[in-house]
Image (cartoon, rainbow, N blue to C red):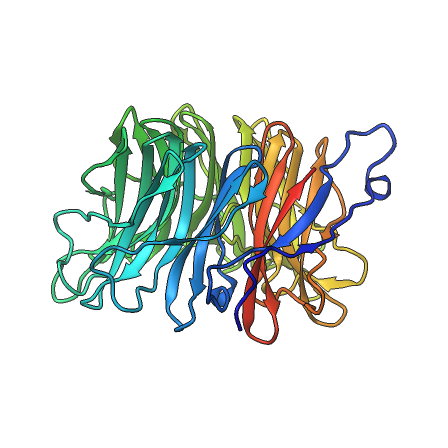
Length: 483
């Protein structure tokens, strides 16, 4: 079935009086939600995938992901919001050596300024290799995508490369991170790499130098990059050491030079085999960042952790205290799309998922205040909600100022259907979540849908993107905005 190219409008109202005490600062007022218009012949979003969103200014955004065309091929999707109006969808043009089914998937997008953005991801080439790609928008015009260059030790055939994240500090000045297979025999090793765009030109790729004692196959994962100014960025991820223990990883670029990676200093109760990783990152200024991740303690319990970088030095990670009703093994989980936001140094808000003493999955929200991570609070669900669910909880967080933020999430209703919601933080206090009303006939966002992207400007204006289940298996996208 073809989707109409004209966006349909659905209502989404908020009663501020019900959630904000008299005299308090007002929460953002979320107004119209709209169905995303897809290219002609599109049949939907594979697995509800619409993860990327960047808004360099209020009402001017780029969203990106993937869609299925009329022949069942996966193509790259670009959505452009200009002056608060979402324009006709655009197809990311795959590199010339792409396979008949290019399987283009955009994982991340970032804009240095309005009309000047970069998107990264992966595609399949004609030889059957998975290759990384990047595409640039210059002056409001998107070019054709280009295969991402890899370090000199990369396999030239049967490659498995992809770019996971991109961050643009200004127009034409970006950094992207990803993984690739090297030429190690008899089996290739998974390495991490960084690639920089300087003054609009993408330069040679560089393999990340790992800490001493890395495994022969370190299985590197570089999850996110954040650049606070041209030439100054931070990266988080994970790697495996020679004892097959997984550790968190940080990498910094200072004044244009990438430094060797450092291993995350874990909380004192960490297991010798901590299964540690970092997957969400935000930087307020050069060398001042905060990141989230997971580790296993000495009892084998899956805990959440946070770590702060101050003046270029990463400190020791701390265990995040879950809400009072959390299970002894809270199974803390972060989705890694945009689950942390820092408007000033060491003042951040974040969210994720945990399990409570009843074995139910719940969402949580947590704040860093002047460098101290406070105890998390449970995501307050709308009336009729049962729990956040295994595929629910907080996915994205964005702050207009310290203590004034919005979050996107999903939860299970009384009928066992997943629903999307947004929740506002006002003056440091999180309000009850607000259900997103879906189009007529749609009863759920499905197990793969919900709010993926969320960006709030300093003036308080916010935009969110996500997906919902239309019919039994077909996912469609939606957008939300505040007034």
